[in-house]
Image 1 (cartoon, rainbow over the protein chains, first blue to last red):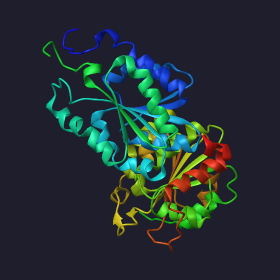
Image 2 (image 1 turned 180 degrees about the horizontal axis):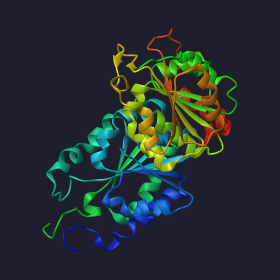
Image 3 (image 1 turned 180 degrees about the vertical axis):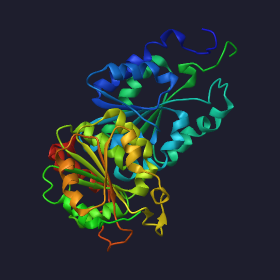
Length: 183
Length: 195
């Protein structure tokens, strides 16, 4: 595919379906998101799923509040975002840290592998540390065939371990974005 | 702008005989106002995470579509989460109401003027986002607001003009884990604590 560099093109269509199945099997009912190209198919699947409410956000921290409210009301919520949104979440993560609210964040990485946009690199590189600073547990998803089990395991860690968990989805797995044909 | 109402009296009027109402209270004076009206397990008061109150209300309203949800917050807290009005507008939860106690001040930090004190129209913002929005500035209007909160079709937004005064502190519990557990137990039963 022109303009794409990816280690795993052949399974690129499948892993969002695996994540959707994992979210469903873990009883996630509210899925909030700030769009990312890497989450495109998963967002569509969540909108199409009548057992889920898909909630587009204006900024990522809104999803932390939504997840807290969902848990107060007896539902499980997941938050989809790109790594650039992690910085927006920092103070809101007080909710998870202080109240032990479960939080499941699926973060598509930018700025780490074959990144063409220098403006994505500072937040992308700082993403794991920014999350750790606020006590978020981190899991890595590097291989598309592990998407389902990794997200299901992260959901257990979040909802049964009562804490904030972020799954960082490798840019190498998604495919580095580029405009035009030059990688 | 003339700010007419007593915030404690307004909140008391909203929360007396509250039935099955679920309440999220934004940090600062709004949380103290809710505590002054009577601490309650189905009130979740915030002591931080400024700007989050409306989103917590949305998550709760979506999870509990048969219950009425009220977010009580201040103008400063609301201004930090203006985007959440757009997010709620996109969902249009029929069971959610937001009451902003607008004293045009940051009350906890030295009574600095907020943007509403400089003329920013919160109710118009909410209306543009899809809320049924009202400005409440006379005591005679409080009963209609209460009726909306308990029975009106949401999302509803009330910008309540209140006096810029600091009433005596009445603090709710501040242990976040305790506030979460007691809310879930009261709403979902003891089984929720084993989930």
